Each structure stands twice: as structure tokens, then as C-alpha cells.
Length: 98
Image 1 (cartoon, rainbow, N blue to C red):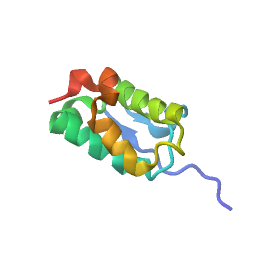
Image 2: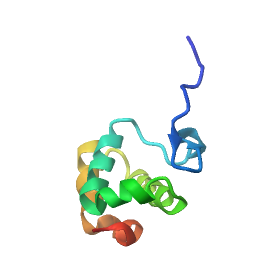
Image 3: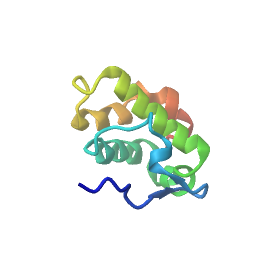
Image 4: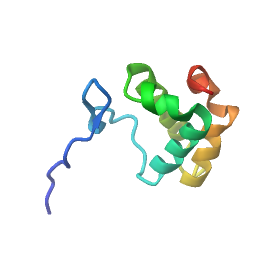
């Protein structure tokens, strides 16, 4: 079994890698749901201007933390999108909303 770490995925201009955020990890199925919700709530501007900034990464980390806190059993991937789109995550995303 190969335990080699996959190629780094650079996030934003700071050149950070996904594994530099070990406390902000969810199963892969959550990714598309969270990003779809961010697109609906925050629009293209968030992805073009903020996703790679410290503020943008912190907002995503807080969203993931909230989902972890709620429990994966209570928050399946399909429900994550509606949580991000709704007012539930406004504490983290209000400054980015369209």
C-alpha cells in the first residue's frame, strides 16, 4: 500500500496546501455541496477574490467546523449546501454575501 501524500493542491496566492488545515477536514462528499452553497450565497466574487485569502480560508474553515460540531450524522453532504446558503452560516459569511 502506497502511503505517499498526493500532489499538493495549492489554495490561493499564499500557496497553502490542503493538509495545512487538518482540523478543517470533512469526507470528500461534502466539498461539492459546500462549494455549491458558497457559490449561491457569496457568488463568483468570493471565488475570484476571496477564496485564497486568509479571510476566505478562515470562513471556509469556520463553515467546516460548524458542520463538524453539528455532527456528520445530523448534517449529511446534501444538507450542507442548504446550511451554507441559508442564514445559519451568516456569522462566517455575511461579509462575503451578494
